[in-house]
Image (tube, rainbow, N blue to C red):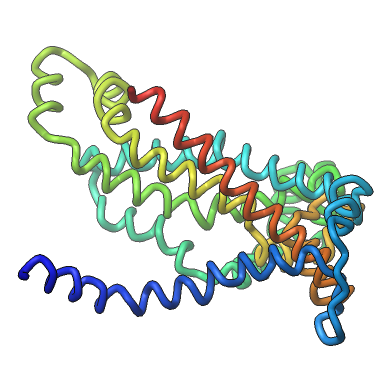
Length: 293
């Protein structure tokens, strides 16, 4: 009877969260899946379209869809090879007990709580070709030849848009890794020091292997977050930037839904984003599981 009462109490307390999760996540996903088979302008009657929307997106490459998918993949790769290693290094250094540990921990995390729209507006000023901070500094130090329209040049626009992404979320991953490192038993670390292990050996042979579950979580968050990014890119380079060099699937989805009023095409792209995130999450989990076993 007591166990039954506990189950009822658990259900009562979790029901609001379950309802919100279902209403704002589960239902929209299935609604998008259903709408992807229809032609609809969002107001008038629906016309069943079969798989024509999928053919338009994936076969006919509507609005350079595959280029946008490649851009989001490049974003994810850069997050994995640049953002996460930097976050891990910062976490290891802070967790080692540096002076001002709590101060630096807070400072690194501050960008996470700032709106992506504000960060996008800030960096658009930094990259401004006329009065931007970056070009001004390059001119002052004698590197004026490197000045350019950072967000207006197809060769640099995507990488320039990636920098604020690193700056904003490196503190988020750092804090997760930092918390995991702090949970590593001090007895193991002390034993390694007695055996003559240095800081680098302790980090690579003890701390990093013991926080693999948290590294898996950070990797999933970084990859799926990069595949779903929208607001920052929309502020920095509206409409995909120069020659679609910064176009991403979420940007195409927004354009199709709210500019072209093509709910079917927009829903098809939304389904692609969800499936893409699920596939990468599964692959990451499978990879970590095999390595740990």
